[in-house]
Image (cartoon, rainbow, N blue to C red; front, side):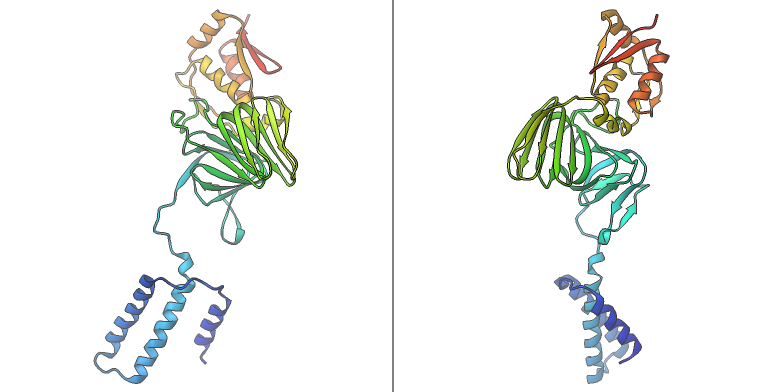
Length: 331
């Protein structure tokens, strides 16, 4: 056996079993060999040549089968989300579960898996409507155009985000589900956070209602509630705050907004939605001033920082008081 034959045999022996090529692939391979055979031999066909080319055809079909896995599928990939903001190391899971940096990734297709590293975060515009965010140390598989699978970490979804966030059609909100090993999380017009740890699933609701079809038991949570699943136990419903430390990471993933020509009132609505707090004005006059005050430019900072900067520019005063931001005119 020649060195070439030995190398080919070693290559084929290391390959895992592959599907038999379809009829079209086999036909293409055999036709290529037949054409080459005719060009070389013409009318002088000997038994030796026939045997040689039969072996060549068999080898070509086998090699085609080996590399068939790298063929581009005929069907177009389904885009399910586009990236609006990211920071820190972001990875995409490739073949054989190898992590590859995704620094230049702009869109996400069904079947892809995203992993965030330490001190990382990412925000997506969901193709069917809504804003999707991932915290650090989170792994999520994008299943199809209405669901993701949360392997670990924290995700947040806002079905009706502020219109100041470009790239999201708030008028065309489709369905959205988060699948986990504990069950499937779905919503009815809401803002909610889903956190999966090794032995526990927690679903926290800022707005609307969330239902979980659990592996063992179902559960429902309303605004200001958290649904907790652990093992085979019945879910527990807890009362929670809609703002504070547990939610702070969401503000860090807030996409850039365009406030050019928009009112301070619209800006404050965005602030309230991102921070999970109500906006209240000192009186009707103050509210009218906020509606008439026109802002310029874009906001790239996270909401808590942007609030301080923009309110100072507009000569408005503000203060936190539990779950409310009170706004008044500067004296």
